[in-house]
Length: 594
Image 1 (cartoon, rainbow, N blue to C red):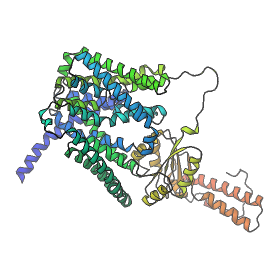
Image 2: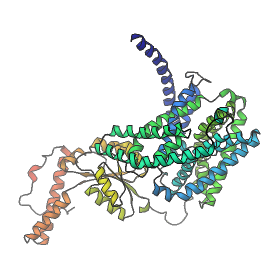
Image 3: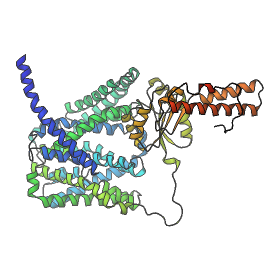
Image 4: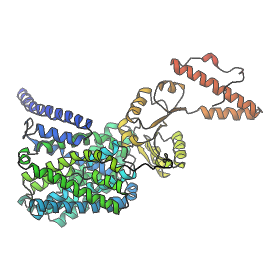
């Protein structure tokens, strides 16, 4: 037993020694690149290049890390599937399946032609390199839109629609590369028609499993209130669906994507996104590090002019095509230019497809390294292009006339807690055309609300990660309509720091709840029973014949002394402050009621 322990310890040391420089370099360069506004993806790639076998050789087996980290791509496709609720898919159908389809086809073929002109490679090699280069970087573009606050704007939704179709197109692109394979190991595989039949059968099976197995499972976990079980169930869903696809020789990414779509229209969507996102971020980061480790700098150093000119040509071709398509789809030229530049880079899925094309013996390892460097360079250029063209892309300010002010149509709010209180608040906001997202943890209430046509998402709305998934970064209002005193000043301060654009309004159970919120950055805190109690007191006085003027005077006096006492309590933090100021035989107040 001691021998086994010693052997395990001996084997564990190299793993730890590998993890330290890997994570240390990744942390350092991601912080630097984030600080420079260039995004985390480039930081991971540079870290991988430096620690890889072609530079410092601190980590010598990138293939092993890549095999493990590819699960990050699977999780990314799962999260993409979660975004595809039927209502949103239908609303953006023209941009997704119109604009997105034409963009993928035209850019893929145009870049394939560019590769053929510049390299003279075979048709299969040109398609294996050019079609992936027609895709853009979801991992880079979406954070840029989020940080600029444009993800939920018409421009952001159009960019997201194109990226969404690009992500969906991964599956047919993988199939195309597999169909062109020259690897003898692939010859003995099942024919294409059988793979297509497998695909349809598995999709139908996954959809049925989602409806009759997964939804009841998540409902049961929601009733138990165990967050850890949500994480386990989410990872089980992704891994099981991917494993089924891999067993049949199909795309694991497709399995994860279908699993996400199965759960996109359930109340558990935001909870699942919040639980899976950390794993996706870590593994996708490791994936980019592994890709950087596999870049052969010697090959690039031998042909630096080719890498630079090809990256410039890639950006120019894609930007021109996307801008032209945007104009055909009705966008003004300035947003069309911005969209073309924003999506002009190569994307992370090109790395996956290059690796597959290399395994299929369609391209050489040197070509994979060259074009990986081209993708990396194009991604590095995107933030600089957006900064350099900012003035050109900005709409000119009219010389005369007033500039338009904010409109209610653009407003949006998160309502946490959808009981009796939250329902009233939500209905009044919706009546004004303000878009709301509803979050609650009561499964029974969520089901009842769904039967009346209200969409309520499951989750703990006081968690920062879940609020972020629900769109708090772009929200103008966050309203906590929770029963009891579940919030305190520390939690509200953290929420305000994370989402400074949103005004925070809180339902307070009583004075004690208000004292817990003392000093918190809230726009308003409303005692839930104050107004209804005052209303009942007015009705009681009417029943015993008190005249209207005297009722108004009594209400005004009560409100004035209540404000005075509450102010003293908040200043001292003592619930008994000014208790001697209770009402006996009141004198006429000097301040107005409020």
